[in-house]
Every structure is written in C-alpha cells, then in structure tokens.
Length: 175
Image 1 (cartoon, rainbow, N blue to C red):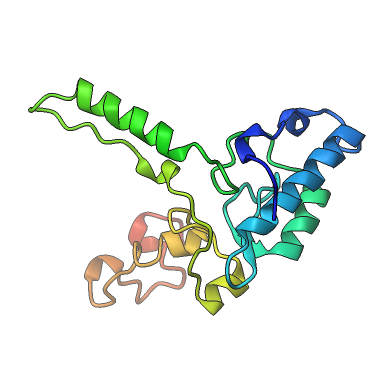
Image 2 (image 1 turned 45 degrees about the horizontal axis):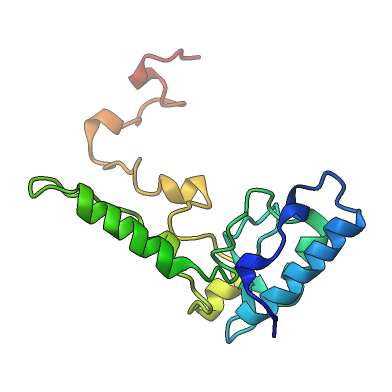
C-alpha cells in the first residue's frame, strides 16, 4: 500500500525534459508503486502513459511497461484515476457555485464525471482482452459510418444495371 496523501506527492518530475534523469525515474517509480492501490479486481488499471492517456484499462504489468517505455502523460497533473483525495471538497465548491449562480429559469449543467473516481471498473472478458476505448471514442471509421450508406437495391436511383462501371447513371465517363 502507498503511504501518504496522493495530493502531497511532488509532481514536478512529470514535466522534466529528461525522462532518463534520476528525478524523473524516481517520480515514475513512485507513481507506479502508488498505482498498485488502484488495480481492479481483475488486475487491470488505467494506463497513464503518454500513448494511452488514461483511455484504456490494461493489466498492471503492461501499464508498468508502458510507463517506462512511453513516459507519463505530461498533462496528467490531477490524478483523478489514481487517488486524488480532495474530490469531495472540489465537488462541494462547484455545487455551491451552481446553487448561488442559478436562476429558476435556467439550468446549469456541470460535468460530474470528473469527480467520480473509479477504483475498479466492471469490464467484460471480451472488452478487457481487446483493450477497448471508452464508449465515447469511435475506434474505427467503418463502425462510425455503418448503415449510413445503405441503399435499397430496388430504388431506380441506385440501379446500375446495363452499365459496366455504374458511373453513367451519375454523369461519369463511360468507355
């Protein structure tokens, strides 16, 4: 287990220009050691490396490799996925601001997802094995446009019978 408050850990090493420096390496090892406390029941943890940027869950040992190979994501300064302790205070402050600034005719929505810290995420075996991206991220353009360009074969506008290339019906050149 990691001793001490996560918010009191020195994070200056994150932006150190030399990833091989003692300062950077000591900070990285401390971060990895702290991450052991946030491994899910199936052995997965969010990978904070520069490549994954907390977008996937991977086995702890693979995360450790990624951290050494790619370094930590340099913009990951508030460790919301790896132990930020002052979440409740920040939430209370923001909710107070919402309450004081809202009128009966307006609704102010805030993104509460940044305040919820997940120590373990329920992931199916298939999802864990394939290291899926978060649901909001589309991993494949074919998936994104699936069904968008479906057409009815009986529709005369799409009928290309009688042409070798099908371009004649659309003003294209023919042989």
